[in-house]
Length: 89
Image 1 (cartoon, rainbow, N blue to C red):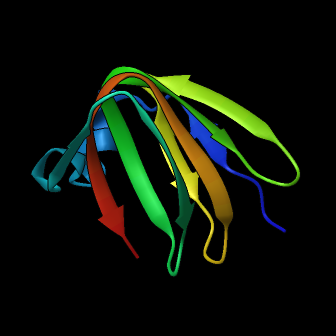
Image 2: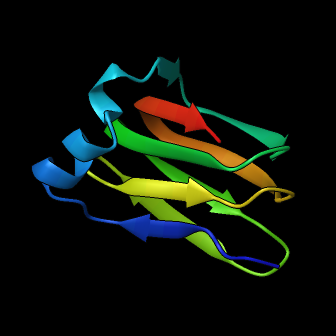
């Protein structure tokens, strides 16, 4: 099973991916199950999130660029209200 990838991208890298034209998703503090039917890339504008899978626990937040692999089942815990750009591939 592929892992969740958390990166710090430069402004040039973010612009090359057109991140700032992607839709925005927001969510208040909460915890929920999620499954990825396709790859999701997202850029966290604010907040703090913990995602738990059968194999790992990943915490990320503002300024992180996160890639979730297709087929991943996990539990999202929004620790601080989140706002992110997202894109499904």
